[in-house]
Image (cartoon, rainbow, N blue to C red; front, side, top):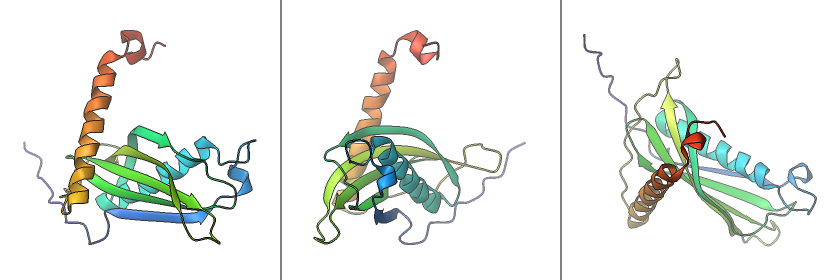
Length: 172
């Protein structure tokens, strides 16, 4: 018996991008007075999740984080802006690019501190992967980000091939 395919309603305009803004608090800094990398990674995951959930209309789970790069520190009191964008979709997956900018809110200029690519999979109520609306890049910038995301995916897939068998099997 064939399972009927439920059509996916196209997402509303503006659901491919999510922005979070807040001030870096003292509870997020390390002993050096800068935002702890783990706190920043949590913010990145939360922002990317919100973007994936808005795009898919579903709960989504993190599959991977790739090519994260910390360029400059975020200081306590900085205004932090995280921008997450859908750049590529598969049948059930969404590649999300996250860029982080921060700076003194009194000055008003934010500099990029971090960026990365994340992959999420939309899941149904039983936790099974479920289809997502297709993202179709429209601008040249969107096309460049889509190519970049696929290049990172290919590189990560190649790295997985290099893993020792015991690491891949979870024995180490």
